[in-house]
Length: 259
Length: 288
Image 1: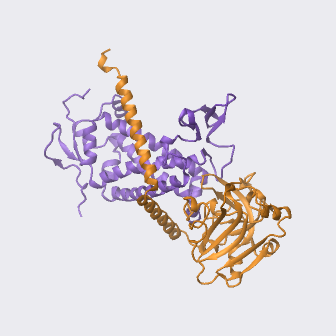
Image 2: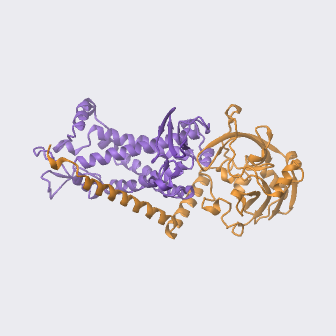
Image 3: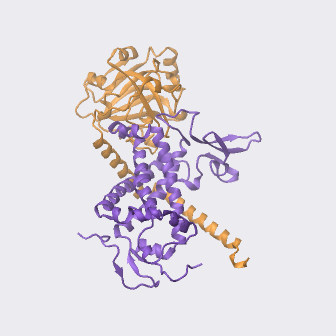
């Protein structure tokens, strides 16, 4: 064997290091770019394009797929907060949410509040749907709840109202900020959008958002606020939280959660 | 308007490699190729960042937790050491250092794919999604445009559909590829059958599949096009197929780059940059 055909360990090491260094530079570049104004505005444009395209593709009446009862998952996975620790919530839970009232306020003609029983007496819908988490997993469950569109019709949003903001009881990960979310009126008025109080035929468990959680079946899971306490109709959500329309939106996730 | 690729066989003066120089790739093809190269790297690495948020794959509509087709996780051994485990089809592999557990020895991290394989490097799902969707918006429309261009310009038929005699000679072509002997002279003017089949597989199967399975993961798209769920057997199946297609792209990338390197790297690169390709001489022996 000729010496020159043997791999030169020095050269090999150099090449490996050069490749590693090149890769590291590329990655560091991507990480720095991620925070640059130029990239952030490109990301925002792409997200706006996604929202526009998906809205154009989907009529406001297109329903999310509903599944047969045989597809219901044995346990519905609970994510995020599974038991809000603050004393107000614990007191409500201790009393079976009999003192809980959902107040609906903001840009509405007839602001008022609803007890859990009042919600249960309103027009309801039962649906077996797939919950898609932004993390990638899916879980199928049967939900029963008050149709949000019917509730909104009762309080009569004013002409200026554009979004429904859902204020929640839980401090996610025990932090200082309460969870909140928002839907525009198209998603809020969708026939499958519910204030759900039942999961798989039983009262909604605390782990899944008791006494009510939002179901917005054409969006990802982080939109579907749990432990909902108050609805606020607004023209803009700029002054709420950090101004991006939701707890996770304030932490870099897109307001449009259709993908 | 005359497309630059309308006449790919035009001989160009100034052959330097001894062989006849032909116009091989149109401007569109060349731009598409390099934009794709960037897109695929970013899409793959940001995709792995997204995958790391839930490093398991399933078949069907939902995630039957505990019944995954593939799962990457970490376990703490009896000695207190973190071990990265990859389970696939009931088989269990210790993948510490790469899958499940990776990073510097002093600061091992539980994560699906290692930091060097993801965009961004640190665990950051929201930002991985931003990169993925931005480049998806470049990749998917360019794919549609290129497929239309291939069909309308006649190139799909002229350059990529194998002819009967090529099917008959497929055994010989495979043998010659194994020996790294590539077509020379006039024979090198056209793609050989293995190239044709590979490019057809990527263009007409893997690339469209990866876009459609990506869309199937969107709950809004599923409401508009529920047939996608039926086509792929559910959202989790679509996610798994998306991952398999990405793996196929990595395999294609590795084989593609290796063959570019061994079959005349400068001539190949030139043809994808300037469009000009020198047909390798029939007589000259291969460079060792």
